[in-house]
Length: 151
Image 1 (cartoon, one colour):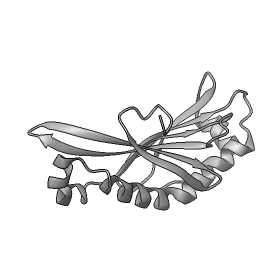
Image 2: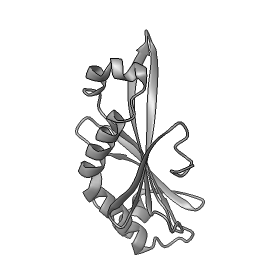
Image 3: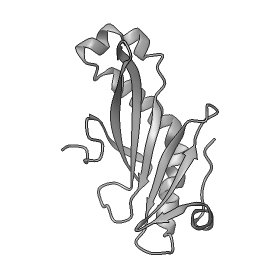
Image 4: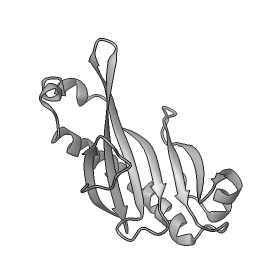
């Protein structure tokens, strides 16, 4: 399960790549994991970023519930026909990015739902969630989850 972090844990257990710290984090009993990126322009991790991640940990149940409900409101025609299958398909958290200098939001969470489309072809639906101050600011289904919501 998810654990809260400290700047000490981050500096010891995470890999440093340029301006961010990185680690794959296991978040449930099925050993699903997400990529965690914590952006920091300095060697010392600001407490603000540690707190933003720790707030995310507390929000995970709320985020997954809201994203699952949101997904069901954005179904394509094909997805509406297989809705009974999709409701039993688990939502996964794929990426969590804690940002240092973003004023609009502090954390970006990319979730996904993968389902079989035709035969052996699968479809991955990406959903980007932007969070600030323990509040989900926006949820958007996107083809390119690297772009901010609203774009």
